[in-house]
Length: 166
Image (cartoon, rainbow, N blue to C red):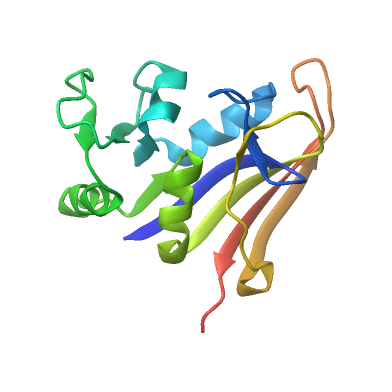
C-alpha cells in the first residue's frame, strides 16, 4: 500500500490560518476530490473539524489522542498514524491519502511514496506549515499550472512527486 500526502501550500510552505484553509481554489478542491475518491483519507482532528462532515466517496479516518472522540459512525477514529495505516491495509487499500494537518504530514512524510502538492502563488498570513523536505529526494512525475480566475482566488501549480529510490 502506498502512502501519499496531498496538500496545498504557498511559497513559504504555509497551509493554514486559524484552523482553516486560507484561500479558495475551486479547481484544486475538484482535483483533491478526484484523487482521493474511493480511498481512505486520513486527517488530524483539527483538519477534520475544519471540514465538519464526512466527504462522500472516501473512507474518512480521524487521528486524535482523544479516546472517546465523538465522530459520526461512518468515520473511523484512531489514536495514531500507525493505527490508520493498519486499518487501511487491513481493508485492502492501495493508496492511503494523508490530508493534514501539519503534525500528521510531519509524521507521514518519512513513509510517503508520493506527494500531490498544489503550489499556491500567494503570500498571505498563515500560522500552520507543511513540513520542510529535501526536494532532491523527489522526482516530479506530473505538473500543470492554473491561472487565477473567478473560481480560483490565486494562480497555482499542481505537482505529483514520487520519492526517488535510495
